Image 1 (cartoon, rainbow, N blue to C red):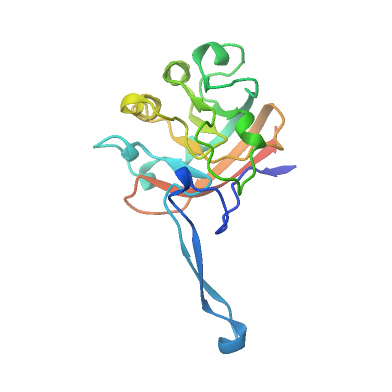
Image 2 (image 1 turned 30 degrees about the vertical axis):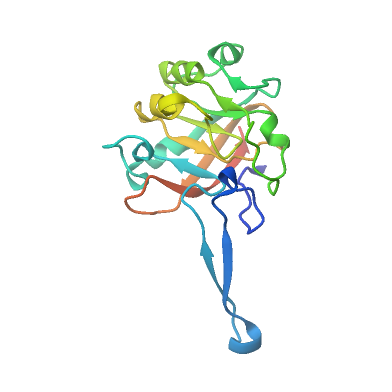
Length: 206
């Protein structure tokens, strides 16, 4: 069974801090052109997207330089819906995952609508959690909101992971994904030279 865990893209979708709107522009329609053609304006961090090291590291790899192998493979969805502020190392120590796993953090963010106003109090990943994940040698980290950190000095969570070449997948929709192990596929758009790209992400029950 395939579970689509991508954030649906539309002009009414949630945007980061309500300041990165997505727009659709009708370029052609059947009434006048006999065909449909639509222009899309979106940010590189729209919906489900992947942060490459270049997002926060001056000499970091851009999204086209991130190996696809790091975004495909064995993944574990962790049930962290009891967390009220940020996922810490203590929270993660309650769960089982191994080096080489793609770790997906399912929090109470997953209960939010895909079109809801941005929640400035979303559940994030604390620096201590990022340190533990990097130390365990995980392959990638995903979270169920449009950001993985909030109000952190020096963007510690991002930098701690990206310095270890661990891609960050933001904007996952994990409401229909039960905790457990899956095969995970997440492919960014083939954009050259940028710090991030929207992606389509799916889970297949292992």
